Length: 264
Image (tube, rainbow, N blue to C red; front, side, top):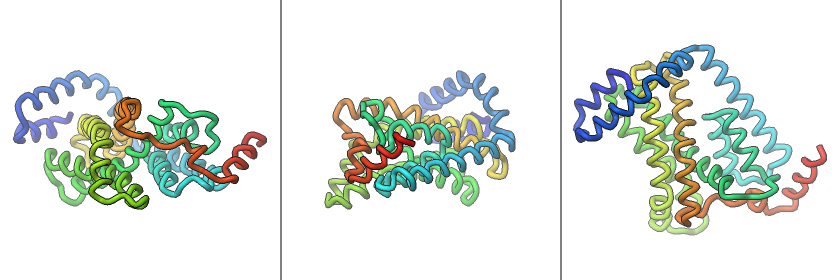
């Protein structure tokens, strides 16, 4: 964590144990930060990352158009956001777990789809929160964290509540379902993602490459942190997990696309 961010937290109303815990983590991760930060501070890194993400999005949309037109529009939106944040990693997750050509399903694949669903909404909230707090509001570190956390929860819950209400579930029931099933994974994801961003770019201005590369990098780290939580929630029956996309397609075209793809 940057010295400025650490000072801001020390002067905040957080309990002493939380401050000591944050400082210990910062000291433990300092060697890794010293290696990663110079790489993320390069305009070349930002340019390469941006280019790879654009190419990955192009591949995704080509696949939607050619082989997976019948994937629900919400999931197309989810996968587009995942790949916009994480590029090749997100494309790999989609290719292995999210296409209608999936030969078999498993808990680990359900975990990736569930994490991606959560990740897409939380990512929108985090990007808006960090950029708005830094560029527009110029608030302190504590307020930045609070705003980003809040917007991440709003984004994550919205992608759960919205589809449930479209299926006829009442708002109160849908919101309770979102709180019960999504809170653990969103909390872990945001603690890790926001903490990583502060560790790497706590003092970075929005006109520097580090501000943007650290934001994208931290989102991806948050995905990794939330994945085992989602797997555990699905295994325990707290979350139902995202359905098998091969069954989600639900049309003859899905089977035809799988057959066509296998012969290409």
